[in-house]
Image (cartoon, one colour):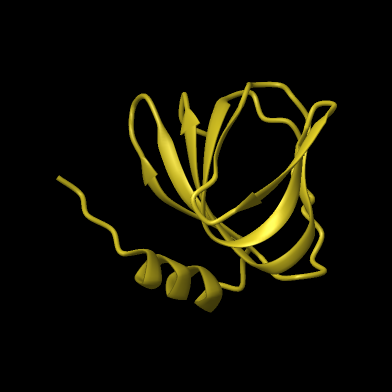
Length: 105
């Protein structure tokens, strides 16, 4: 069993001055914590893996392909492999748990 605390993961991510911290990589999946501040740009591009986002805190718009929705704490979004997507119009500090399957490279 592996147990993680989001506050500790977020502290580790911030100490390493990155928006993304991968904290788990297994044979069939990986997971990370993604953080963006209001006004920050989400520079990610489409990934070769399926993704599941769970918004832990914050508020933003998320565009996946041609669809856009508002996400906030408790939102869970599936992003199919190969589909362009990005967070934008971030109005509250965003913290997102990200699960990739298969694992990210």
